Image 1 (cartoon, rainbow, N blue to C red):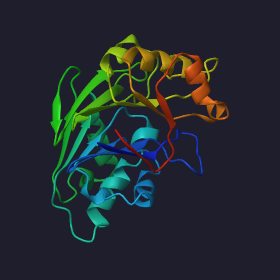
Image 2: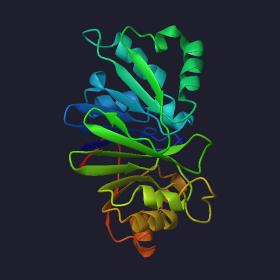
Image 3: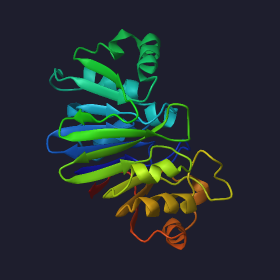
Length: 252
């Protein structure tokens, strides 16, 4: 399984980081996790075949995770050398259909009828879904009413994605034994509140989950000035740590 961290930033404008967007590739299956501002130029810079994505999976509805979806579908409609005919399947938490109905009402019916088939499906907690050569599972996170964490498995390996989340004992169980945990780590402990993770809280989840490797994303400037890997190790996480950047490729 191939991961490219297309957008690793937050809602804070950053000249070097787009908002949340991650590319997953397993065999011939192409998946985009979230699609925040800067996703399209990020995909182009990474030379990824964005015009062939099969699935778009959404963790929650904050604009730094979904803001570039209309532009993505507009580009799939108008920017390809050959018109797209393959379907695009969109998966997201409860409320995703309503979100896309509202986007179509705002931008135009082309958003759901762009000239190729588009399906919108909502993920049920506890369900197991086939996405081509991958399987998808989700669990709730303490961030927004709809927000979910995701687990993708395929090719004998597993990838966990926290989306945005506060601390949760359920996450350690959900991510148990993942080969790579792609995790938000937003703010220092004294600033973090209950709907994001600090290094100490992320270390607790990753250690309890026995995650082999940790890819850290969604770091706000207040934390980015600190040595995050050192804080994670001091809090007890002993696995491999990568501070991801836009366009970084990892093999799960």
